[in-house]
Amino acid sequence: MELAKSILEGSKKYTNYTANNLSKLIKKKSLSTKEKDVAQELKRLMEEAGFDDVMIDGLGNVIGRIGQGKKIIALDGHIDTVDLGNRENWSFDPLGGEVKDGFVHGRGSVDQKGGPASFVTAGKILKEVGLSNDVTIYFIGSVMEEDCDGLCWKYIVEEDKIKPDCVIVTEPTNLNIYRGHRGRTEIEVSFYGVSAHGSAPERGKNAIYMASKAALEIERLNDRLDSDPFLGKGSVTISEFVSSSPSLCAVADFAKIHLDRRLTWGEDKALAVRQIEEVMKGVNAKVEILNYKERGYTGLEYGMEKYYPTWKLDETHPVIQAGIKSYKELFHEAPVVDKWTFSTNGVMINGHYGIPVIGFGPGNEVLAHAPNEKVPVDHLVKASAFYAHFCATY
Image 1 (tube, helix red, strand yellow):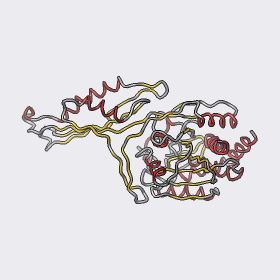
Image 2 (tube, one colour):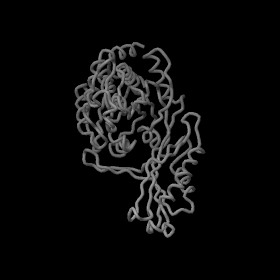
Image 3 (cartoon, rainbow, N blue to C red):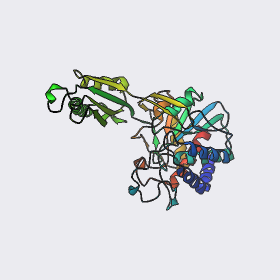
Image 4 (cartoon, rainbow, N blue to C red):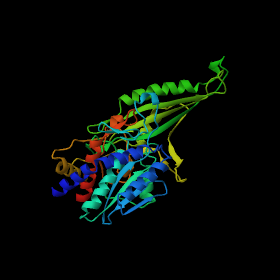
């Protein structure tokens, strides 16, 4: 309990430090594959905080280390953000990083630079109080998450050869403890028709009609997908519809739809593809899971299949129980244990590699990707304390 008190006092002492560090990160615009400036800033903050080692890997992930024990804990926070959207919907400068009225304002304050700003402070606190457990802690500012969840962790495990015993994902949880979320996959369906002159459409086969009929069946499919008591229902929606024809005076001979398929517990990519193929029976169409391959800011081209497995941990899991224990010792109340609505790097960390994940982060996820994004400074303080205490006691 003395350790918890000391850590909490430290996090409160560094309130302005944490808020100002987040402000610095927000001011560095960092769309996916363009994170260089914010990566350099985060590296500088880790070095100033006294981390034992800080490096940027081949993909561009910022990796700080404290300790060199046998037990390995990682804290993950992605440093890329979505774009600003319509500036007229913002009542303040989205890249201003203004600290005002108990909040830090700006794009990425919630999703999700608040996590890295808090774990830098946690590292600073741990260097001051010392680590008595046999542990190595990696603090990871990951890249390209908004474009391809988990790609960064594929690189960290496969190329950096870092495979922790557990990971804290610092995506926003409103200071609740999260233990899972639905997975997803991106499916593309291409329809092949036959063009004809628009004055005699009966001579051709219109790919737009083919796709439209299939779209109605996909809407019906969504209603009958499976559900899980904790994670909720699987879902599918069409997020893009494109077509082409030889001219605007011709029958469309090609159409394509993009499906956002959210996967609940017990659903995987094979099931999702089979369900869409069933809808396409008798139709000249191709169903395929898409691949992601892009060049990061380091110049490295890297990619993976756009399949992001579902994951969840039981509330009795030792990592979740350790998180609950830390929360109670710090804040003298029981935490809410819940799940994310959206997807995180947990799809790769736990969904693919089976590494236990606990979610805990500052900010409310309803503000993710939204205008007027802001995070309470108090959340940053409590997150800093939680990260430090969990790592010092796990």
